[in-house]
Image (cartoon, rainbow, N blue to C red; front, side, top):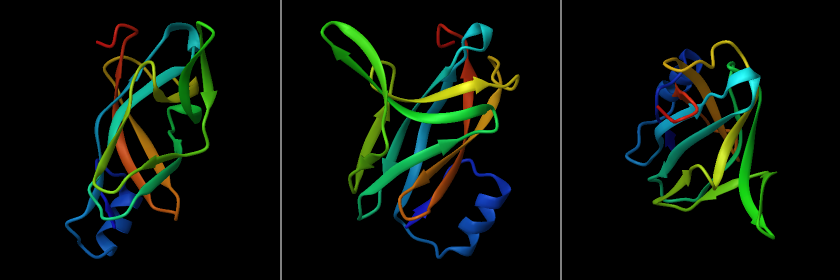
Amino acid sequence: MRFVGLLSVAVVAAALAAPASAAEVTVSGGWFRALPAGLPAGGYFTLHNDTDAAVTLISASSSACGMVMLHESVSTGGMEQMKMVDKVPVPAHGTFEFKHGGYNLMCMKPTAAMKPGAKVPVVLEFAGGDKLGVNFAVKNAKGQ
């Protein structure tokens, strides 16, 4: 299985050492919504699994965040809540969308790097130890 994207140097070295394959796990449309006053930033993207096996996202990290959590927005009794999730399965040859009002990454304690117009590194970790490095665009509260 091969994971591709905008990769950090360490991830590129590991990816180059792995055998090439037509099957890939990729990310498209990655971005964070930066909010004022150090409020948590939501991260959104689409995960594409073009491999013959299901993959499970188990964590994310970024140097632009004190901590990154996998979250899901849920509506209970008319109240919107965010709940942390331990894993997100993506079926073989499937996609999974992290979007506003659904699943998202929650960047807690964003650093000064989390400013509109910037790009910040994100590392997605999957069950089994595979990692995928991607750059996310940073947009303002309006998603621009």
